[in-house]
Length: 275
Figure 1: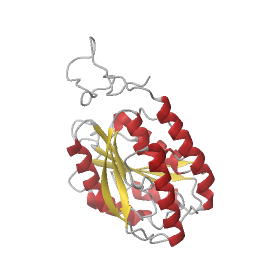
Figure 2: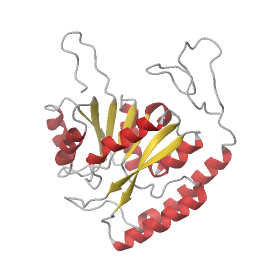
Figure 3: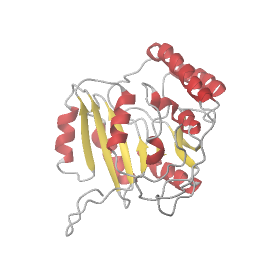
Figure 4: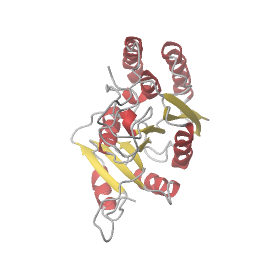
């Protein structure tokens, strides 16, 4: 957990940080957070919820829950800034070496978090992202068709080796996240951005489930035009990355650096130094 040690007063840094973006999800969050805790029972973890300018009392509920829950941290945007901004806020505040994202609406099942983490850990240092891919979608037929067409176009242009980049469940290595460029809708292009930095991606199938309370904050048309611009923007970013440097230490960085950042060492040489 993330509570202070009883004797030394030294903070225990969690191994896994789970970031949950949420807007007006007061009814969904308590059960979702309980499910996350159950899924990670026995592991060192923290959960960071970002309230993106909610008006339903989400922050008040989180403050009360966090006062009784040592692994929960809550943050709030003064006004709604969007899901990408919420994910980024939480990831920058996270302390774990492995960062997990999951949507706050409950449609992503936290029971798959251990499988994502295990897939990332077993894949080796060359793989930086374990991405969930939804099966058995519960969205409307129109949304499923739109999503399938968008994923096909994205895959054809970006060649990101991913069938479904819209799933909120992902696990990424912290040092690699810190290398990635940011823009709105960035979280939907993580596989392509990770590949751009010279790292690999692995996948885990995630069975979709119904939202328990409330309604979706997103439609079909409100994503289409902006999504197309983002897609070509990421395509441009990938084309402009001509070569990922292979970096090795010459002096002054200590030992233990072999293709990646030394464990627990800040200021070490990253696996792919940005140009």
